[in-house]
Length: 219
Image (cartoon, rainbow, N blue to C red; front, side):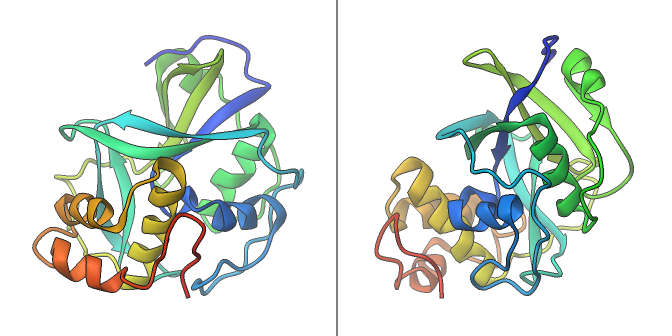
């Protein structure tokens, strides 16, 4: 969706583990998230997000390619999938968005992305990497809604089930952003391509059983 405006601030929309505010804080200020295996350098500007809210993206998520941080499949967004993907939006600077995108590709933040193409066309492929395709999903409060995903679709790649640790991180983010309870989280995650067929709602709920609510962090 085109979004042809100047963008000193943007809504970065996470549909994966960055829905967890503490984890996303490691992308902004640096550090190692709970349960993770990798430290993040943080943004050049480490200030906290100006605002955050629950959000939904048209389409769905699926799990594929092996995460070096969590093991198991990573979450990717495919706007062609049916339904809507629950997500979390963070209002940050365009420079911070550039730095978050760099860290998703295991790179050091070192410069601002040119967002003109994605704002004008709604999609821009910066490279072949797993999170180097930028998408603009309209505007919110006058600022563009941006996310990134893989250049391929869910039907073009081998699916891979996510790890229990990764599901726990997604679950805390969904609870925080949308106020969902564990049964609803488990029902949702069990339907996502890559998780479906390996994880059931019951097995996910068992894995998440120690989560007490939105403020609980995974062990």
